[in-house]
Image (cartoon, rainbow, N blue to C red; front, top):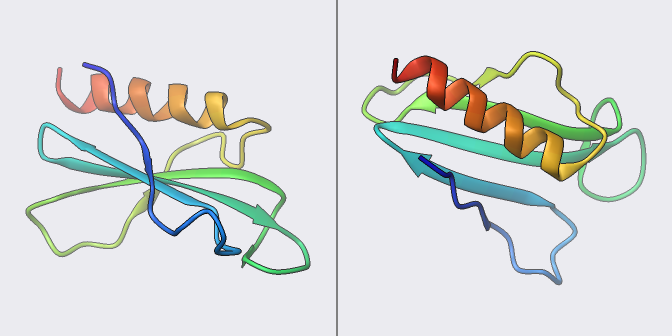
Length: 85
């Protein structure tokens, strides 16, 4: 049950956003910083999820922002496992 994240914006774009979907859920990881181009927030990788079939806002995964993309990806995997028990 591995999520396969793909970059949403082209590499030349200043936004760093990746998405993946599996088993009716959508996951997004964004890289945020306190200043400069891109998304602003606490520095790090913010992970969130939402059901695909419902028009609901995304829910931030606990522990966000993470220091590395791999940590955010692992948090998404754990949330998917929890949601599909």
